[in-house]
Amino acid sequence: MTDAHLLHQLIQSAAAHWPAASALTHGAATCTYAELASQVSGFAAGLHTLGLGRGQRVAVYLEKRIETVVASFGTSAAGGVFVPLNPALRPHQIDHILRDCNVQVLVTSPERLKALLPVLADCPALRHLVLTDNFTDKLTSPAPGALTAHGFTDLCCAAPQPGHRVIDTDVAAILYTSGSTGKPKGVVLSHRNMVMGAKSVAQYLENRPEDVLLAALPLSFDAGFSQLTTAFHTGARVVLLNHVLPQDVIKSMARERVTGLTAVPPLWIQLSQLPWPDGVAEHLRYFANTGGRMPLETLTQLRRLAPRSRPFLMYGLTEAFRATYLPPEMVDQRPDSIGQAIPNSEVLVLRPDGSPCDADEPGELVQRGPLVALGYWNDPERTAERFRPLPAAAGVREAAIVLPEMAVFSGDVVRRDAEGYLYFIGRRDEMIKTSGYRVSPTEIEEVLYATGLVGECAAFGLPDAALGQAILVVVTPTAGSAELAVDHLLRECRNRLPTYMVPRQVVVRTGSLPRNPNGKIDRKALATELVPDHG
Image 1 (spheres, one colour):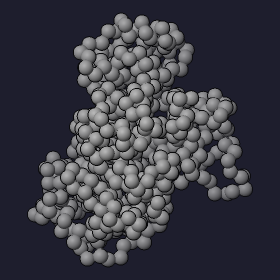
Image 2: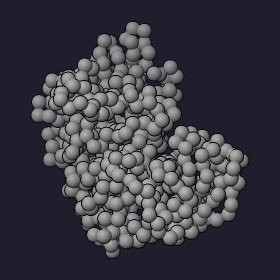
Image 3: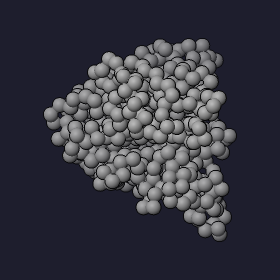
Image 4: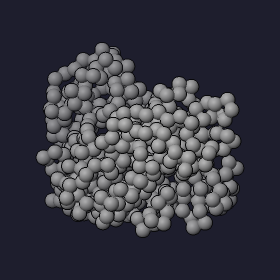
């Protein structure tokens, strides 16, 4: 385990402990911790030669590759703030982020740069481009002034020099959400947020130097970047995968003898419906779910495919990295639970007046501790909605402590049972109000998956004069099936659900449901497409 306090120190400390150990693999290339630390140090020195100031922003717009990791951690080592940009984002979305946080340096590839050229004129703070493949030509921007292009390899050859003074409460990164409810908002994360998150997750996953973690999620997603930080904290190896098909994930698991894989429910659903070659389950020590509830049917099938692997069901939000996990030994008893708080964090279930809910009483999930982010970048209104002083009625702090403690109010409705285990009910803004009841879309979707008749599904409320909202579900056939028997599906729903929860309308789509850039089902986009007046 490393003794890091700052983000880049995870690599420095790992290089001191395990210099010859493999740190990163991308395709046929693998680098050791010593080599990675040297590249990070070189990139940091290169940023200083560009005049990067303390806390200035460096955006990284690349697919997963070794340069992506070097640029992110090298920015931290230089005393800057890195902004990872999802490779799936379009130029207009990149333009918004570059302008929103006044990015000074953009790291990208010549191929990706071509699509961005029309929007760079809107980014007056941008001064430098760092391009992979050692592209060293000069580029003049149509914006006032000039953009100077630098080759990545050349920049990393700069002579070492002292960095800016940084402490663990300083900003390390700004992670932009997918923007499904509007323009993306930047979640501001400190070094402490990211390092303590790595230590907490590595503790309950029991990560170790011999682990091989497959980075299948985007590095712009907090759970995706966590694969790097937890691995570097423990001296494990990370395999960077830019998968196009779920089969790519399975092939990489077999080829690299992966011991740990974290994914979101849509990917797990796809993986559970495919055959796994011999050897994959033998090496897979654990699999972890994040970014939404895993259907019980999917979990059951994964456990059949990998009977010796330990399943970790997790819940979290970008504003606090990770909140809860369910220990594997509790999965059989509580497969529908999101577990309890992760190490060095506390999760509360509060009423609107700030007082704690009783056992099994629904309330808002509120998280406190060192993983709570620093708010949203340049957005005081939305920050004030989500990040608020912990109310005295919560009963966790002495009244004599004058300074307030900031907590993150998730907007998620949960309940806690008598033994302290938490259960996700739904987001307050997604609950369906029908026939006088408040219904969680997740609860309906769980039943649809349990029928074994659907591949993917999503539930919504459709405006209805008599019911308030009628329930609409969008479904896809199971893998390998060309059709879906709607009548059969509705019969199963009537047998398994109370009358008020039975869908009034079923829409069948072929192929996968739309995804947001983090790989989750894009519920907002799907609802807007099918129900234009939704929300």
